[in-house]
Length: 326
Image (cartoon, rainbow, N blue to C red; front, side):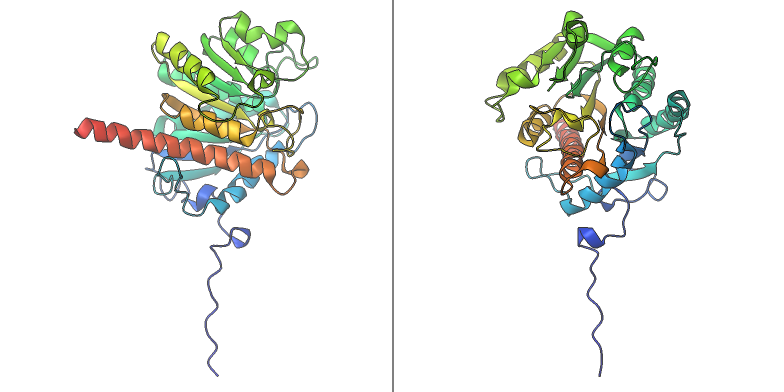
């Protein structure tokens, strides 16, 4: 009796043997793609629960549920324009060693692609900002989603960590203080740390003032304030740094330092979608810690945020190309 061939099962996310984000080709196989993701599997600077080193792997796995990845709002899919550089080989015991190794690798990738970085803990953002600052020759605008202000001058007695990078970026002149935007902050902090960004002219939208606001209409004042601020400063290049703990633990339990009272997934998606026209030059999504996740909630949210960002960039590029042809 003839046995029928087995049906291919690779379309099931849980059976996937593809390790890349959205199952796209590796950078080695497709080096000319305009967009690229890379993992920074480092969590040596966490102050509570470790595990963010496993974040890149979990985000990639969660992205496989996005199928053909065509975004329902933007109508674009990163597939066909995106490669995956894998996880960068980095030291895992020294924050300065990690940063020294990350910066040249990041410089090469930034020169060749529009990058989305998968973390890893938030200490990785500082060396990335150093390379973007060098690449564009001017301080960056930053939109920073987080539960924590990350403006402390020391890291529980150490000089640097995942809670100091904003302070360090200001001191090093990597960012434009007036174009630094914090969204979702709510953790305990002395006033000097909590108000560090607004005290220096930046914008601050705490989680408390965002409660109950999810639709574009409800968030219109926030959306407009950022657009107007960036326009008033000549629309500098914008970097997005998205700590998954900006979400309430109900939406993202898988993180190292969860803080109740946070944002909803809908809120973050609305802001990402409505700000898609801003001149973003790169983004990171950090602090996903799979050992504490439930039903892959945090990694699924992270994958969706990165996908939404990439789809928005592609839609903006297509709109710009269409305008140029006209």
